[in-house]
Image 1 (cartoon, rainbow, N blue to C red):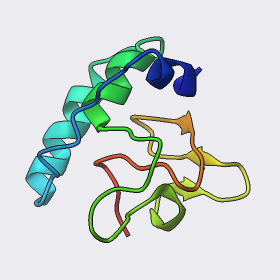
Image 2: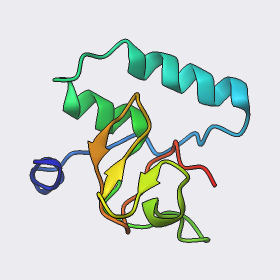
Image 3: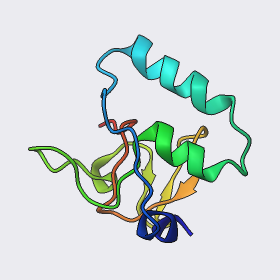
Image 4: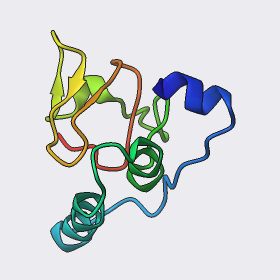
Length: 93
């Protein structure tokens, strides 16, 4: 389903990357306002990508919220399936 949305041309907000805890919290607050069925909007707000991001090639595989064996993003505001080479701007180590 996520990959289908990108195949249909979905563009997400990868910038600005939240540099502070306050910015990170504001992004989480915006995501909390969405219902679980608003997948498209969740992907847009979180800056979801189906590829590593930036010069450092950040990806879900190294994110603290990624559950490797389940291939899942465990951040409660997202709670989505994720592949190791995907990325979102809520990425943290």
